[in-house]
Image (cartoon, rainbow, N blue to C red; front, side):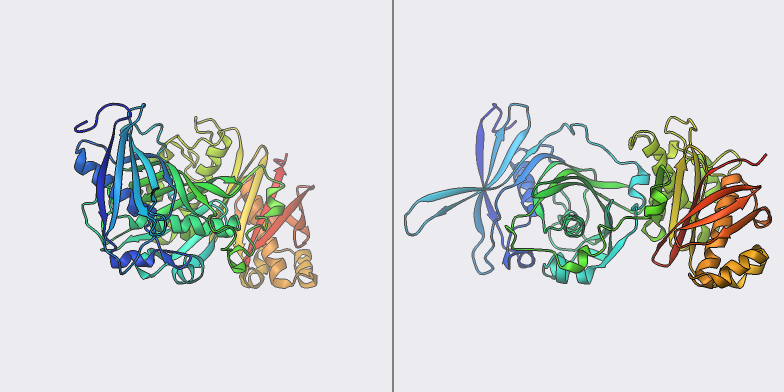
Length: 509
């Protein structure tokens, strides 16, 4: 390296940190602080200027040790970039300030950020396109306006989560914007999309961990392509591990077609206010409620996706050739639900294969040779499980078991009740009219049961209407008779949508 080459050798490069007006919108406890992403960018630019051949696109073992407070009326901050060659060949870079006490005359050195630039990605995992294409699980939506007024109270320059942030137990997902602040040729790209991704991580922690956490470090950050001012991207935050005073997440930033711009692994989010900040009660309301408890306890594997979380271009990239052939023949209205079913099945395939999130999504085909029936193969191609899928206007769901299975999801409306004479027998109509659930709820359950039975046995609906008889309708359990065999149908409701599951179905003789 030019100017520094021996292990342990250090160089201290002066830094002048300009307190630009937009930085005053980034606050902790009412005081402006330098964002961690800005600090990383400053260190990268300084290091590249001194050592032009340094690869700053890969950052490992970053630690955000101390806040650097900003004074809007003060001069530029005198700081240093202290660089050092480590024993493993990485270049250590530290953001340091020195302050002198007026009372004692003692000079104190503070290390605010430390990181390593490394040309070796060290096992950097690139997520498959189906992982980036949607958010699994029921979603809690938080409008950006409420996010920044109640959860991450930064000023307008840092209101860069756009639209609704979608949060589920599986993570957070939303659009992040790079405004026109700062240079377009910064070595790490615009700092704002990654900073907004940290806001999303903070919100996930408030809902699912019950704490207000700030970034304290990360294991590995990689810049694949530099984010550009004036551009909007997608971000996905995936929780990894809960800690005593925080949690770890992975973060990905990408475009509509799933092209990856940045990733960060093992981002450490910690509670640093010593209990001074607590989430508002509304953000955690319902977060611990079980999802589809009657279905999940009676089925080995279940995946649900809300259809409006699907990024169409990214999801299409996840399709195999066989899936894509059918997808391209569909009308625009059916494409999203088709993608939802495929993504649910691919997630099940990965779970059934020991949580294999390495196999490319396009190598997993989730429709059978007839190009109609679903399948959830292992990622090596073997079919060992039965599966069923369904979707309505909001949800897609897929289930897998070791026996024949049928699942259905329906929006609860008067449609089934109005059409009851088409698919109900006389005794079923009497059940509906006498049901304590009400005629609409009971009708939807009977329709949904017959839909699930058609999927379990590969019948068409007309056969199901004729051969399947519902003997009892309950809120969470109904009884079904077919070919003198009795089955239990299990129901769960969520936001005016009914989910029905029938398992252990035996092929009639």
